[in-house]
Length: 563
Ligand code: ADP
Ligand code: MG
Image (cartoon, rainbow, N blue to C red; front, side):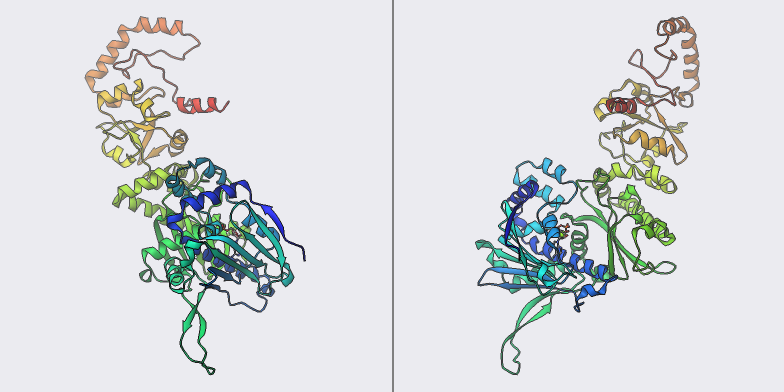
């Protein structure tokens, strides 16, 4: 066998380990949840691969996680008979951070433990959390289907490096041994471990065993430590809602999403009839670091008849709902369904519409019943939702009803005004939704383009998000009212003027006819038209772009991008 060799962690792992040990101290017990979560994922993966090759079970298809401890030695072990890892897997998974958004995450760290621990919670670090309580971690693993001589031992003190060694491992799967730090020995205790499993891993679908000291006498009169399953060991989504507590749902979320924060809300539904499936969807509380990364993982965890099939099944949700996490368990799809098949499957299409409806309805209800929670959602994910009208024409109005904007009304300097609020406040005779786009609330609120509207008491929406102008062009209208950029074209202000104002306007045009002609001549080639306007009340003049020309904001953005 090859001898032991030492390898260095990638820089980002070193940074992360250091940070984690210092900032997650108050939350140290979550290491167990993370390791059990990985063990359960490993069992899921084996069961999936064994669908094609049941030789991978090696005659042992009772998948389980076994936890053991040695109080004298101060160790805890977590062992599974899941898929296991070969040498390359170990180097790739336990020597680097493969997660997208890592660079973004590291760049946001401040060195302030309190702030950083929040960021780490948002990022999640899985396996490495073992080093919060252990000063030495040993991983012994063998990939299912490989010869027993191809086992690997990984060992590290969680500082700069780790060692690798080839070992003989009879049983496939992974065994992780934590050598607890001196002041963390309390974890090597039956009662403590049991309560942690109950608290964090009850929802794990494979049984999690702990040895139990029993006093039953067998024939030889010996005391025996019999392993006993401590958790429910049933796929959580198959249990009935009335059996599940909020904590069950929250812990399950952390397992499926790999996010350490609690979710904002969830939807758990069993559908029977033409289609037969169960879905458990979550809306996170915090946007992930890689939300704007096109390659970022998204989609649901797909199961077919309780068997894990794939992570990130993206066919079940449109892009504008890519923040939704969760599980879909279908009784209709075939066990050998692939991504390619999912793309063409008619049932997938129907499930997708139903899931979209469910998410939009949930958000609509939240907006109605809990405005504060809804604004929390909007602040995190509103910009993603704005992709909706362009992507999902059929649900355009429903999505638009969820939008929130800043406006000239009241103290709406934050995005709090819905289109329905706006329409309810429209002035008599007004039939357009007026808006203006720009970089910030401050730059917009003092725009001369708003003078006329302020004077007339007409509300104007202030759109400051980069995607707004594009979004409005796809939305086009809402509730039968079209959108009008107040900086564009000839404003149809007639509808808002009373007769005497119209009269006045005509007189003004007569009086200033000469001036307008002279200005038109002087600005020849610079502007298209010079007009007498009732837009302005305080400023002498302003520039207006044509109705079908690009808006100022979009033009500046394209110029900035070098177009
Ligand atoms: P995540 O679970 O979010 O992928 P982790 O840091 O928890 O991140 O784990 C990193 C990777 O290490 C996993 O994705 C998996 O490939 C591998 N891994 C960890 N624990 C096990 C295990 N018990 N069996 C097999 N592979 C594992
Ligand atoms: Mg994990």
